[in-house]
Image (tube, rainbow, N blue to C red; front, top):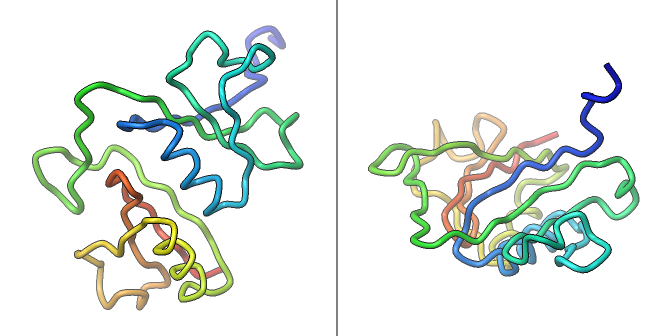
Length: 137
């Protein structure tokens, strides 16, 4: 069964500009941005950019960003384009992490479950509208 065991896992988000969104998440997570190049697995897909943890690149996990035509952002919490997924990031200080996220282009979502942060997390939207949460660790 080893020949069917995944050796690389990528969770990808559609977006209008793969480089811009990869740079946002790379800076937010302090991960390296991997542009398509001749030695990269995604070299055949120039509209695909990844970010990955800098010290575990060999572990085979990355986050992908794929440019798509006519991208439509999800509407949080519900709307004509529903949320398809969201990311949760556990941090020591939500207020400190919020400052970084907002400086990079994220916005606090208008809708929060309960009092914002009262449930141990705050919902944000990345620069192209994907929801993500900063969660208290």
